[in-house]
Image (cartoon, rainbow, N blue to C red; front, side, top):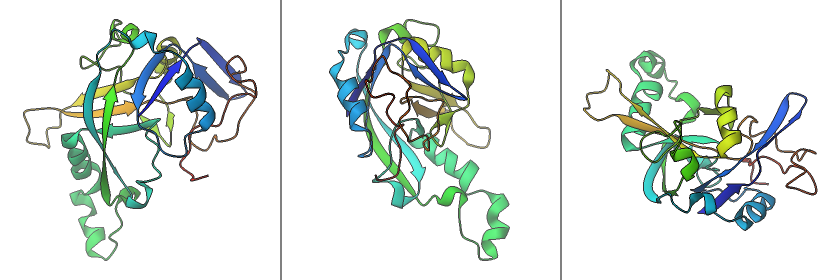
Length: 223
């Protein structure tokens, strides 16, 4: 598990790309491709913002291609509890509307999903976030939907700038699922949630924190 803490409150903009930094912290697991620069800087900063917040352990799941499991970066991504990932598979991936296509011999699933990855997380969101009206599900922040590492929910960029990265949660009920308890989806924010994974080249942003400019975004590339 790696600890991340964003120390300043700044928004850096260059053209149509911007990079955020703010005050906040979270504990999360990251893949081998996470940039050493990010680790070195963020690990060096104290976790005072989280001192009064409790640490919780929770299992999270993600439906994905099996070949991506080992190289998967759990940052700027969405996960779910067990009920949530099973509900996702039955309502988005393996659905009745696809049966005709499958019977014709095309067995490819949406996103080529063929496995479920499990991760044990230790989560501690910043107390400042938990004391605000953005608190969700007792110990979490608002849920952010990510697509290829990028969140399109621009209304949350200001929240990110104020509190830094957080682990978000969203309770979901679906009339198609016979369950008295809601499923839960989780979001694990990382650096620059407004940029996609393919923004993997350092820029001259974030010069206050990085002498050589803003590091590349965490990517799933193996390089």
